[in-house]
Image (tube, rainbow, N blue to C red):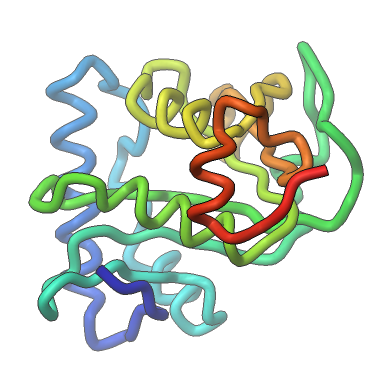
Length: 180
């Protein structure tokens, strides 16, 4: 698998991945995240233009999509029931979605994102248990709750590479960075 920036001419393929992800979430008890056509075609095209929409390919087929943008993100200004690990500059991972056709594509995208930034913040719906497990398995820490643009709550996570625990030391070696 490989990661590269998405292209405007791939918008239909990218949106199809998001449709498949929405169907998976509905089937698995997450009926309200990404409703009402979220993410919109316009949002994804804007992120493609900004250079922060990525695709994961295998054998020239797109198997996963996500956004990795530089912060700060206004969504993360207010946090409650906890706090961020620090106020250092960070990247934001949004809308990680897999076609479901390639096992491990989500993990691959997450690990690639971790290689790109010292600090990452991400949020997910309380019913999105697969994403929560993926984040926690990769050293992300639950920091509290935030509110997204549609007014709903999300669980906020942050990864700071120096906080990756001993149980993840094998993954640390694979990612090629050192922890303090």
